[in-house]
Length: 253
Image (cartoon, rainbow, N blue to C red; front, top):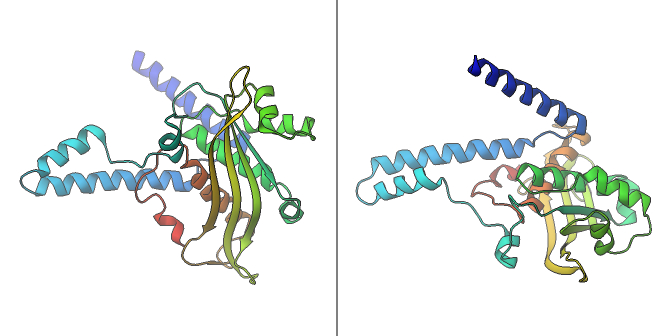
């Protein structure tokens, strides 16, 4: 009987999760699911190879069994000595775009902030709901600093993304998709009684696909835009949570 109750609860939780995903309009990116499959396959291949080799390979096998595949430390953690993953520190993600960009891509600032926020949430970072951040920004159109946003939303950190360039097409082409973004990223730490402290900065120069453009006959602009935003969200997200060797291999085409 207890097992039945457990199964029913689990099914109910899964249904609630699916409804939540549909209600926000955001689904777990294909890239994240694919990366997990690649890591599982990579771990299996490593275990198999270690089992077939003599000598010290047995220690490699033991290490993989205990710790799993090695990961790449996030730039933020390495540079600041701090981490946002698995803590109760509240993070607000703010994005704003050059007016010329918004003439062509009207809601790109909202979309980038949403994708980055959702990916961080999936990776155990306590991000304030992007709708709440957007509501505050809409109510305070004259805001100027990350300090204002963060203190109003009671955030511990504000991730500020300034889009300087954004396009979905290969230059001088209307038939080839190749998303490009140039942006400035700054992270501010907020503490009571002290001005906001900029603790982390990066220039973002991102292109997808990385190797060859994609024909517009293979996808609609809307579908490609969703994929590009997912990849861009991962590129920024990997600065704050661990990634794995091979995560960016599917970005080639």
